[in-house]
Length: 436
Length: 194
Ligand SMILES: Cc1cc2nc3c(=O)[nH]c(=O)nc-3n(C[C@H](O)[C@H](O)[C@H](O)COP(=O)(O)O)c2cc1C
Ligand code: SF4
Ligand code: FES
Image 1 (spheres, rainbow over the protein chains, first blue to last red):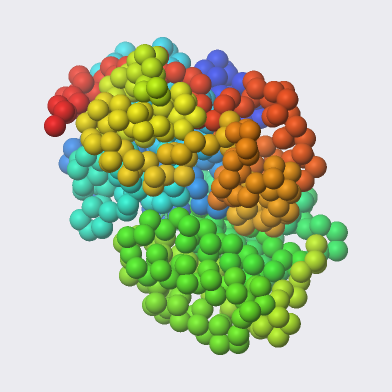
Image 2 (image 1 turned 30 degrees about the vertical axis):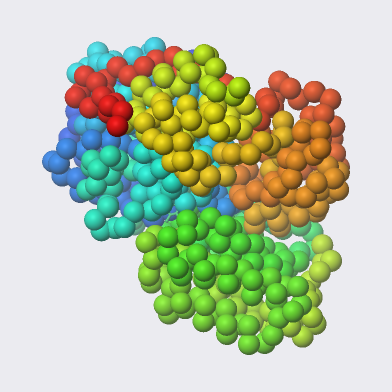
């Protein structure tokens, strides 16, 4: 292994019974919650602050700061975001299926620190097994006294409800998620004023945190915020669950100490990605979910570090890395990602709804050989209409950032592989067809 | 026919009771109705509307926003082939084309015998097993064309009945506890019907 830091959120995943209460209790389960109840609310918040735990849902906002923004205002609800649908992201899927009690314990610790009496886990509807495991774990947790009235004999009571989604990427966006949880279509709300912390679920102050974010809390409470902050560097503390996919020998999830590992390590180290197939070379990789601009071989030595990746012009985002080798048609990759955004646009904003469809058509035309040289400028123009300047981070003209995420892959393909795109025009089709 | 039966209604009422506002139960109830019938029948949508305090049109209008909720009948098995980036890089379109040939339907269609509906899915968060497939939201992968043939054979023969329930059955574990704390903390009870 490339780092020797012990795993935090995946410590149990190797055990067959990791999802059962018995398996959980045998491996330190619910000790974090017991400790939290001893420490008291303020001390738990202080530990989470000291850990400087960054949100793992994509935006990387410090959890402690999010909690204290609510100050003394009465937080009414906690919602755990388990809608995981960002393409190539599969870490929360793992956590809800393999360690549902850890999600529940983390949510309960957060709810205690925030002083809420009802929490929801919004679980992606397609995770049938995840829903079954979470529901079974909730039943067990109530019976064990870890949920419900007077948790472990304290004066703290909490109800936790597992809420199934129904298939819509946009519901991962926190305000769309709240709409969906209210039984409506998943239309993101306009911010301001609809920041969940101010006007959240049923109009009440609400904290939304990601599944992986809360899964870190039992460990933080047991070992102290300082021990968490000692892992990683700078503002990227602790470990992070990376999802590696695409053209590598060993696709999968890897929990790694923040900042200590480079993209080169993740993709090529024999204990991690294991490199590319025989005879293949790296063409490009996406460092943090399909909303992120792409990197090329020049960026391989960057650390898996939120700040460093941000400075280099992209984002660590949802922690998912997609590897594309030299057999990849980058135009087709950009088309498929654009098609996804177009399909998942909720349709409220014109640039996102219309722009996405327009871009998809131009890309498809190029891929199928009907494109013209001017199409490249047309693509960039249309991107500019969605996110003026096509810079990073993108300028936002829409209600949420789904729209402004569309240009990332297209601009990457045009800027990094202009010649290959033009070859599609010259050859009247894909020059790489049949490369694999 | 296809109104919510007693058992589904019992589950629906228990679900409604978990939320501060009834409407929040709309989507969970749609899943329960699909578990009963495989899809959302107009009669079920009427019942859901009454249970959560909205009009049937609002139930339909909400349901059609979501990919998992079907307001038209679908096959016993909904085969969703992910073609998003990680799966595409691993040959998902070859798998999808093969599925179209094997099942004799295009994406979005159901076989004549009502057994299979084919879908071209977005990322299913199973990208480490690319190309990844879900059948009624149970995961399979990696699925290349020969693996798809075996999967279809096994589904048709009933060999996977334990693993893959009929379409619509999502969560086979029932919550056994109601709310204990929220009421005590003064969270408002469900609103009255309009
Ligand atoms: C289009 C879109 C999709 C998103 N999808 C998810 C998701 O699937 N899971 C998630 O936790 N956050 C997602 N987010 C981020 C959430 O809005 C929110 O920032 C996050 O859940 C907060 O949790 P954290 O602070 O713990 O990271 C998404 C955001 C956008 C704009
Ligand atoms: S940017 Fe797109 S997804 Fe976001 S609110 Fe606007 S239309 Fe909907
Ligand atoms: S891209 Fe296919 S499951 Fe994620």
